[in-house]
Image (cartoon, rainbow, N blue to C red; front, side, top):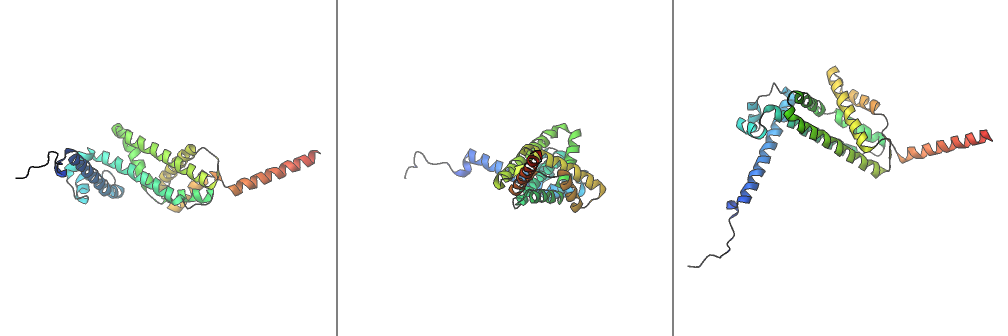
Length: 234
């Protein structure tokens, strides 16, 4: 009978590291499925109107899996809201990539943000964390990521087109999202349409940057004013 090689490789299925990776992968997939199933239910019914059993049924999972991965329904709600806000931020950045002027850029941002209910969803999570401080760190990390990625995207657009920003990129990002949250919450309470919310956002935001054409025109006007003042003095 032939002898087996001295260093015969282990079967992949019996490799502890492979098993651990497979377990982590399956866990990430299940968490994602639960988040995907829970988000539309929370949006439609709210936190109190959505039962854990409803979420489990929508995800084809067991209720015990929800408590295993998220501990509580409130924790799942907050994670759903945070994830949806970051998805919206990504969609907003993608929509603004087509802009050629600062005005088009601001309009693309405002139009995309006000067309979604993700900001209002996130605001509910903010309110929830007042009573559940154990959930606050996730919200804090989400806000930090929102601002940092927004600042990066804005700085990239300014550099790409050669615009002159009227504020630092991080200040512009924080200001944009603060205005968005305030106006959208107020608008939802008053029943305003997405179009009205967009118009109000643009009004409050005002001018964020100037294009090369605008900057050149300003320099020309300044030069004419200086020349006129010089002629008057002489």
